[in-house]
Length: 125
Ligand SMILES: [Zn+2]
Image 1 (cartoon, rainbow, N blue to C red):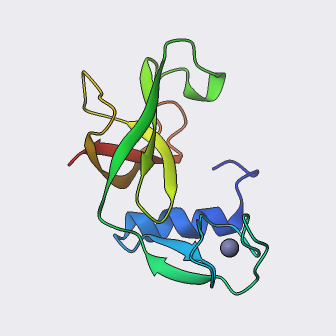
Image 2 (tube, protein in one colour):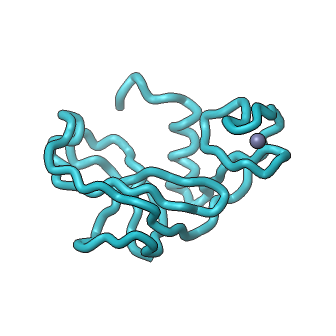
C-alpha cells in the first residue's frame, strides 16, 4: 500500500471492485471522478453519485514499453482512456493483443504486477 493514495480515490476503487462503481454528476450534468468536492467544469458543489455504466468504449490508448519503476514488472502494458458516457476513465487495458479505438470494454480492479496495489483495468467486453 502506498501512503500517497487519496482516501476518496481508494473508496472509489473499492466500489468499482465490488461492482458498484459510480461517477459524480453536478446539477448541470457534468460527470467527474472522485475525489471531488466541486464540479471541475462549472464549479457546482452539489455533486451526486450516479452508477457507472457497465461498459465503455476506448477513446485512445498508449502502449508503454519503458515504465516508471512502480510498473516495472507490468511492462509492456497498454493504458487506455475509455468513454463511459458520463465520464472518461483511464486504466490499464489487459488481455487484448490488438487494441482498437472504439472497442467495448468493461472496467474492474486488478493488481499491479509490480507492487500488488489495486489498479483500474479494462478488459474487452
Ligand atoms: Zn458542472
